[in-house]
Length: 135
Length: 198
Image (tube, rainbow over all chains, first blue to last red; front, top):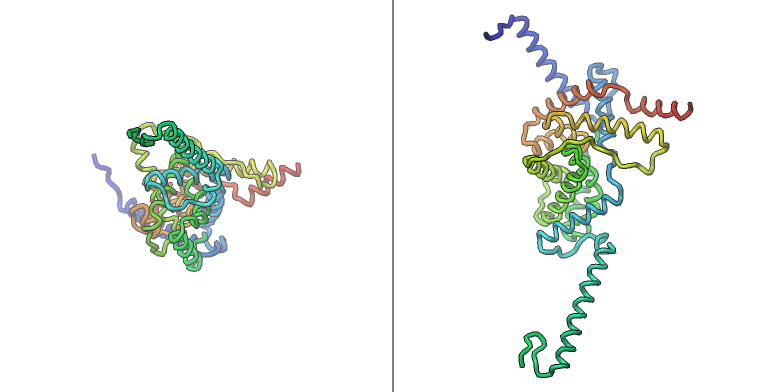
């Protein structure tokens, strides 16, 4: 059975809806003003404006430590570099990170080692090609 | 609540242009927004590890897309929030999503342990209450108060009208007010001071 509503109920619902829309518009206007207006001007909005200040302060409180910020930065850079096949230049902080400097140094030393081994091999077999191993 | 002024936006446009010319200058943009994006992702996911993943991936995409980024006169954070929201939505469609109570890192600059504890406790309540809101209301609150974005910017990120955002914000705030009630920030500090004196 559909619920029957009296004209008074319908009017109440309409008024409630209109009040809500009006309050929402007034709240929006108050939130957009540079400074929070005198709460006495609008008693209905007073608790909501106080809550807005609290929400703003709470949601702006930093959650990350410096260390977490650095970790996220390094991960973001690594992800971007992987997807783009290496960026031209990264953030300066990352370039000076010990892990990055250490990794680059290790890669350089490995390359030097390979080249030295190839040269030794060539000296041992002067007729052979250093890479292909054929005369 | 503070929104960015025309001067703020112009300064941000210059920062982006500078970073586009030389990615080593992306750093100020990262420092400006990393906490906001992390807080947004943490409130949406409830999981610090996932929030870090989302934040790192958002900034990776920012770095990748920087050369193609076009300034449209809205804060750069609007673009970052949209990327983060898409990442969370994509992850949420996978199974195994667990909502946890957000946690807060310690603030080394806090004036006293009692005040720090009182603020952290209230922040936990506020973030938990925001996290409990229906998804659309939660998004609207996070973008409005965490991101300081305007209704039209929020509407663009969420794919809704400005009027809808206004109502979502109002509904969310009335719900939060019922759940959180008093005390207000000033009272909170007074209480902490009283406790310290006692």
